[in-house]
Image (cartoon, rainbow, N blue to C red; front, top):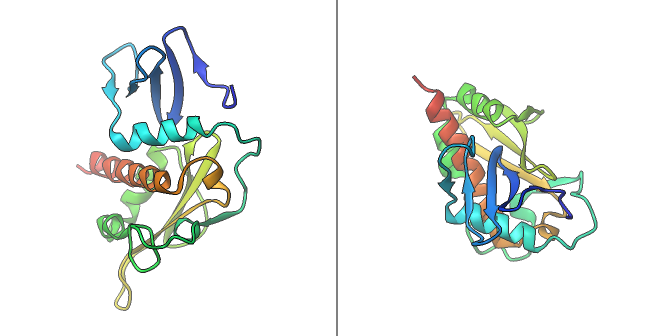
Length: 184
């Protein structure tokens, strides 16, 4: 009810990173498909856990903050994959290096809205109620390629810190897949 999800007697439906998912009311299985009249695909671990975490934390009354912050500044626990001394995003940054047009195409394919910042940037939706901004910088003679992920300041009201990593990982994988699918 908190999210006004589409539903029928068998499923709850929601969009996550511009892909439609359904959750079986009987089994709890999470599936996705471009068209549920055809075969559905089972959601992977990152997808399912992110969806479950967001829905299980659905007792919050406040909307997502309009103030965006870098994802690696969210917690005082900076020891995991998103800590200050590691670069969780480096693999994706290297993937897009030399292909800013591919990055922008992938953003557009996921209904991203271009925004300012970096060599290219766009606002996407984790969920319809939870935006995310991705900024990309190409490498140059002094610096490696770089990605920055900006999320609502209160994203931890919507999902646990660990789940943010699942959501970001899924988002980056979708962007890379869209880039691969657009390359001849």
